[in-house]
Length: 93
Image 1 (cartoon, rainbow, N blue to C red):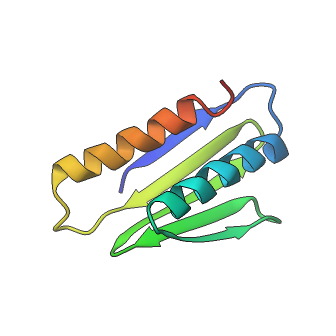
Image 2: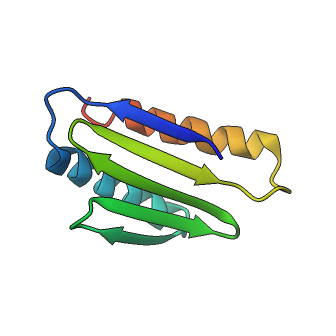
């Protein structure tokens, strides 16, 4: 299960969560993903046809865990991972 983490020095958990939540909501809408959030815990989950991802925001960082079905081609996994990393890298740009 791939895991990604990005640190955002000087950013509060609330600031990061607001950006991550907005980004994930946009991705979920664009790709017809199911999206659930827990504002109190600053966490969220997306899923569709065996692909699942969850994130957790803490002070200064976000961590994302992905789960892919065994039959998903490696090229598709790589594409999803690259899209997530690109969004994380530009979260406060």
